[in-house]
Image (cartoon, rainbow, N blue to C red; front, side):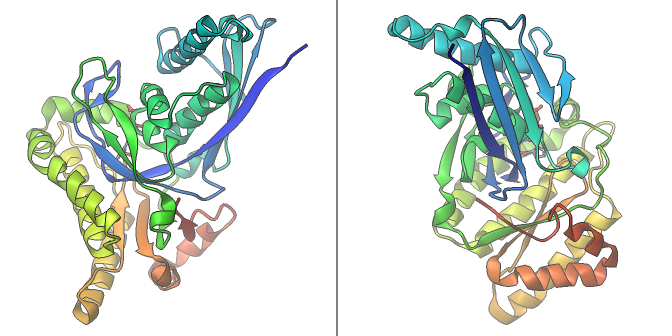
Length: 351
Ligand code: 2P0
């Protein structure tokens, strides 16, 4: 008897131009385009195994070993349904293919980083889920086409289907068919850029991204300015900086966009605070580090960025990694505890 099973994994990505806001909450269509770097560390990935079998009674999912409900019409159910539909199309075209699109699936997904680490696991999780179903169903579908489906699991997941530097083009069409991820440059184009992840607080965040961003859409006038007058130019400028391997421009834009994302969170009613005092102290340290660098060389050496939580990600060329880690440990002595066991603090190479 044939066994229909496949495993795939996908890494976490960290945005330089932030996604924050949906124009369509069901299809997960964003109010602006975004751009991220996919981390290539082996220890920041989700790995997912999917299996289809005629004996299965319903679709089921296990996350880190515990079963999670697949809600009818929910995000998981949508992704599974879309993937089955793609398989069905193949089977309809080629009658020699086994008709596994009609079988229920069992899916098991694991993060090899602590879910409590405060790092987005939904991006790598949904990307790995879609990739594993694509492998199970032997779909010839492109990564961009798969990204459209991962997007409906969690917006930022669409970017984790590619390594390297990735844009999520917001698109214009109401059906979402042009809202997908594209590669801006592969990792090999600019291997010198590294990411340091500083876990400031590993507790679950107070306001979820999904709820927080819609509150921002509903109440923040600054978000409207950002969408119309800021992000389009920034997307073009940072893509150009990546293509030219211009770290100074890349860093400037990345920090500006992190700042504006947290400004729109603050402009939300009631306001949302994701950074804490330690986050702000790390910003001050990087600002000072850059001030000295600009004085000496005219160029920035590091860029901080913060997502919907207090943890810092610092992008920097490889030559500065050791110096920055030493600086952080000097000013935040407790940081030494974070160096191990997961290596979340320290040089995390980006892919
Ligand atoms: C980003 N974040 O671009 C931004 C920056 C958080 C801050 O994508 O509702 O978990 O599942 O689409 O993808 C977080 O949003 O939200 C996020 P849903 P998601 O990475």
